[in-house]
Amino acid sequence: MIMKNKTNYCRLFILFCITANFLYGRLPGDSSDPSTRLYRGYAYGSVLDTENKPVENARISVNLNLFFNYEEPTPRKVNVAVGYTNQYGYFNITVDVNVPNRWGSPKAHYMDAIVTGGPKCYAVDHSEGSRSLTSFFIRPIFNIIVDCDGNEIDDNKEKLLSEKFCPTYILSSKSRFVRPEPVEYLGVNSSDLWYYLIDASGREVGNYPIAEGMKYNPPLDDYYYFAGGSNRNYSTLTSKNLPYTGKPGSRNASSKYYLMFYHNYAGDCNSSTCWSDEYNFERINNEYPNTVYAHLFKHENFIIIQYWTFYPYNDFINNHEGDWEHINVWVSDDNPDLASIVKVEYYFHKQYLVRYSDPNGSLIPDSFEISNKTHTKVYVGGQNITAPGQHSGGNFPDPGIWPAAGELCADENVKAEGPEIHWNSFINKNEKYGIVILPDPDDIDYNERPEMSWFKADLYWGYLDVKSYGDWSKVIPFVNVGNTPPRGPAYRDGWGKVGSGGGKYKIYEPCPKNPRR
Image (tube, rainbow, N blue to C red):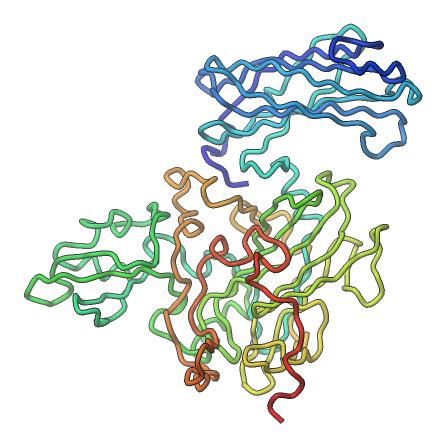
């Protein structure tokens, strides 16, 4: 996972002195009910950074887990207590669990400490681990859990969960397919940015690669540091116009201008045909490893794994550079060994639909396709019946014709004639490719990780407006066929949300039957 202050070496170690006295009988604070027994665990210690300085206000959540049968897959009784380190880095937390006497003595028990960063987010060096003192009755097993992004999921389990439930993607077109690519294919370094140059009257002068601005007088990096080199932090950039006063290019007089920065896939090439030609080498050679971006969070009692795919362009009834699409996989547990699929939400064209598994984890008939009981198949759209485009990027549970699924109530043919991007092709890649775990944007230190600036920067992912087959619809009030490129995944309506995304998506229902007739 990419986290603040996480380099190739872990930035925090934790010294825990833990004692767990599980005392039989009633203790102060115990229930007056003689049919119950109190078990009490103690966790105390300190949190220090790599310079042995105390970390203040680090959140420590301690779980006491009790098993009363060796065959129980999960603890029968769990209780949680939360505390924070003081100014000296110390914490002292007591966890109480009341259980019925009829259960007998616990056969196994362990404690977890979930460490969430204080003012900064750190990672834990597990080689330092924790040590526990022999208690009166039991020497407990104590696990350190790190949750730097604050989503209440062990960071070390996030990659395992994402791998276990990674989808397989079946592309629609045999000849003009577009793979799920890493953002590096687009070019997301500071030196890869483009900008619109706009004069003081609001007239667009032109659009240029950022290197062109270094020829200005004064050069752009006099105003904006990131413009002057490769791999610089541009995470605070937005799509708003930024001021510049000077002489762009060969102009003799100094004037005031505005700059709007954006990502650009193919330079001045701005049509779906041109994009397809530009992409053809990658289509044939798969030069970049297949990549999907996973964002995990909790909703109610479930773990939600959002799988975000990036496509360099969209070729449908609407055309645009850059395309971010996603599905939500709901799973039952944060333990990768126990977790199973509960349901899957598929998103396409501001709509979504839900497919369920049954309580035993097997599939309800006609629900969705799956392999190895954990990897759902996603059929990527698709061809619009009324336009020649071959790739919409939408995510569907089945191939075939989906009535009125596209913009303007157009039918969409999800042909499934293209390559199958098998889930296994995303596994065991490095941090940049394969399955890339994305926290929330504020959980990354972009001064240490400037190459991740694309994630926080609120920019458009392509040329601002291009022609498409659906341009005729612009004459219809309140209709937007969608030629504008998207913003990054963290600024999409579905980021960190389920279902309708707060009303931004509607359940898929075909438009009124055959409105064209």
